Length: 266
Image 1 (cartoon, rainbow, N blue to C red):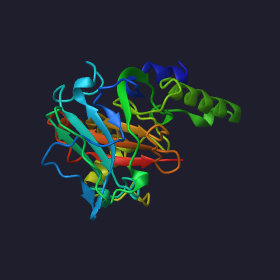
Image 2: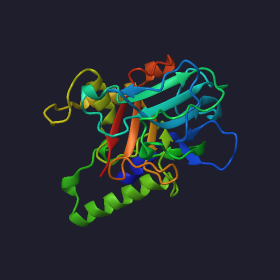
Image 3: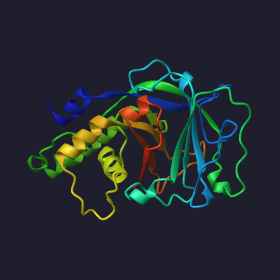
Image 4: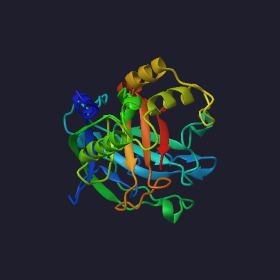
């Protein structure tokens, strides 16, 4: 079995968030959130966060992708307007926020706080969910690079990139569950675990063990991946992606306090 065949053999299901022209959908990227009364717009260091997405759990089809505690309620995702945090510093916590409301019958949109800049008021883009298969990055397959010629190495990387992109069929890579589409490396679950525990990861001094990586990949799941996308007018760093990670046990308990965000870009 070659390396590409190995990747295909361990594919995982995911939910692809696809732009929709259908009216009446509650799930969306950008726009204004339907925050319940009494729920404050989150802020960090005295500045309001930007609103990214609203996910209606009742609009998600029955799936074996990610196990929410129930099939109703709204999830709201926010992030630092200045994109000043990348998720490798424990002090980054608070620069993003995930809010859960069990009630989907929220009346009216919440207006933007006055300190939310125009570039952080993303355009509304309704979305629906399609089940897709996604494939692991080459970080998850033990490749003997020393056995590859330069030509074989280049061909393998091209084939792998084509495989990863094939899941999205040319559409933006917004996603729930499954393997992340990585830009800088597939180590985010262990980064989330360690940063949440107070380990600073920005200088490369901490060397993660194989066991730490494997345990984190078992314990954490990709809650939401948000791509750079012209429809809602979102860009993360230099054409990058945002990844919200959650412990599986927290997901079951509707606990989103320890969700960890990571930004990757080229």
